[in-house]
Length: 388
Image (tube, rainbow, N blue to C red):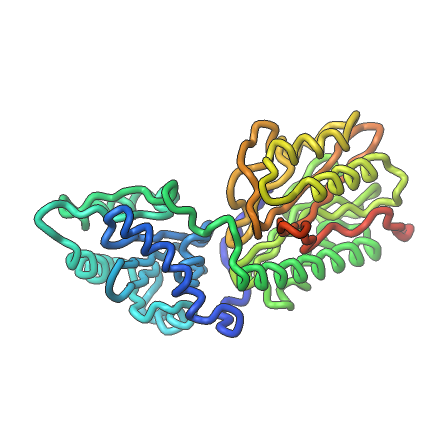
């Protein structure tokens, strides 16, 4: 789902070392250094910003609260982390990462912190440096990087060579994702309870966000329907009471990991809700290691028939989720990607029909050989709501 990125991130940012100790990042870096050996990269530059930082967070644990960050990771030697923040913020920044050498990348500090670190890899021939996340880098910053490198170095895009973060989740990642799923379920419960009391979707969404932040969420995104589930919109500030079903979307990030959920509150009489629930059950049954995205999509549409997929889903019924809200390709009719062992995916089903009604439901699952593990799921329908 496309949501609105907050201008200021005000959530709880910390390094939970009891759950992600430093040795976890040593293990993660092993795969990166193996790729360096195979490709002859003396170093890899990993970029992330406040909007998208999955690879940066996976390898350094640093999540930018403003602007951007870049990890300079060598095959041998000490790493360096640059952040687009003033020097007064460096002490707080150092508490969020295992990298000891943390510098400001603002203004004139850029050349002082970037150039000397890169210079060590200079040779008679231009050295090739791997890059991750540079596709989302602002043009002005990319130009500054290229000026600093000059003709001494060549950049090679590593995103397609090495998936960071990997689709298969490590055991400690699964622990983090389960915690995020518990948080989004708690927020969804508040969302429903608030709606039953006031029938104002935006008020319910704010109450859900407040509940999530009280549980140490880093970020919360919400969408609500003001027209009975036909469309979803970000916060408008109207606080109007609306008749018909409540249909909304919640996404919560905790300790770097996202979980999301569609919520539909209905009296159970609308066929749309029953078809959406059946489609979600069919996808959960199909989701297993090796299953193809197009097969999951086909199962969903067969269960929805004769109704059509809700247009807000854009033809997709799911995708990976983790350090990014969208990891990997969407589950579409032409999707050929295969689900992986210990992959975590959000599955989404919905119907919008003038006669049958409107409903959107979802579940987050872990695919495993013994069976699919449901980490979170939309509240069950029917949910009998009180009269206003």
